[in-house]
Length: 333
Ligand SMILES: [Zn+2]
Image (cartoon, rainbow, N blue to C red):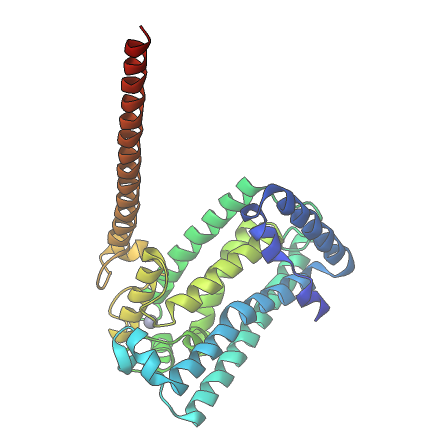
């Protein structure tokens, strides 16, 4: 438990947002905690406990909260669900409990598979899979690795989801019976982990873990990537129409369309490959990006309108001042 509490990743990545002084204090504090952690625990233990903690905090806890909200106050939940009340979870305690247990089992299994791969890779490579040094990764290196991880994940998720999970084969039948058990409506966040274990490992665990194995980033970069993807999966599967941001809202809308349309399209996580391959259902990701850009342009235009108005007022004041000076000179002479 002390290991869970001493993962100060949030303070580290939240650092730049704070003022420089408290930011560098935070960074120093983070560095000291990280160094203590690295020196007192094995890299494998930090990796597995850290990943599990991220999944619990950013998926399991919010999912259970949303499940309670959706089932206890459906009158409040239905208006903010995509497709309305048909997207609410079934109010059947026994079947919900079975789903929660399946989700927890799948989370444990996914962690165990990750442990197996990490131990195997560590033995093969003669060093831990992720760099767990006391030196922190550089910001540009974090950005580069995260971009590579996201790209590889999108390619893997799209192809596995489209050509294996919706191919009509045996694994596709399992994905259909578990993940697509509900024949209509948007999903809810718990459903990130309620697929059959086999399609789940193919669709959720491997697309994140295989690229990480190939790139072997710093463990902190891997943690940041896990936080971002876990948050994204939780929000995209939440089925809420009020998911913030045009881009994230679009991802949630497309995921809901995948489930409501029984897997007719929208196979990728972000939707770029769906757009490129013509498998988008509803508004695609490029239209979302255009909307986002337009929103910023409107903001800029209104900001420049405000500064134009400010300039006009300033010009008017300057004009008045000049006129007054002129009059003063005239009366002095
Ligand atoms: Zn599917």
